Image (cartoon, rainbow, N blue to C red):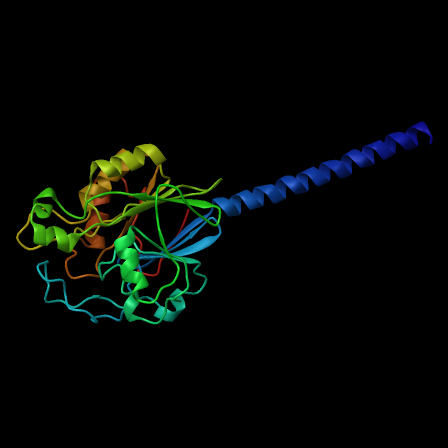
Length: 297
């Protein structure tokens, strides 16, 4: 081979190699971008579809038609029937693409799965403890799993987090404590993906601070409707000041406000929360999705 011909051959080979590497890098970048994508669709109340690490979860499904159930006794505006609003789409359509269901607790406004035909009985369904698993298995669901500190599902990690579904004053009363029960939060983690913390039905507690410090979530979903019991001060979930607290406690995170305007004892409206966050200059970090709205991170 002549020297110039050899040089040209080497140059062509290097160019082809560079193109190949660039193509591989581009493919890897696309894959990484896809992997990191998180999508949350607010459905109604605490019900949401969470697309995470290539899988889709249905969170806390309340799928009944408007006005199906009586209001919760002993709570604000108990004369109003639940849910207060219709689903933003047909219930049967909600299951499209769903790989698993998460039930943070079995209060009716988070789980009415025993009263509808839309959730497949064999779908993976995650709960907080054996008591809730027993209830849901009793409704005919066959793949009920309890979330722990290191629950692995399809290559991702799900971690149960704690809290308290009301004030110490409320839990000092046996009957009220039994009514409120326990509820879990959950942290989603996967390699290369944003960390998502669904706080669940709790007031602000040390457990929330500890979870924020340990996991440093990129996205925090707060149940922020400020639900109230009659005869007690304080809320049984979070409210507008807790949204502000979350923004201060996790300054790099985006806050998503959920669990609003759909159940009789919610006292905080989206409009009021929107005005509150604007007053404190955190509107760029807090999302208040309408029912049916899709958020992408």
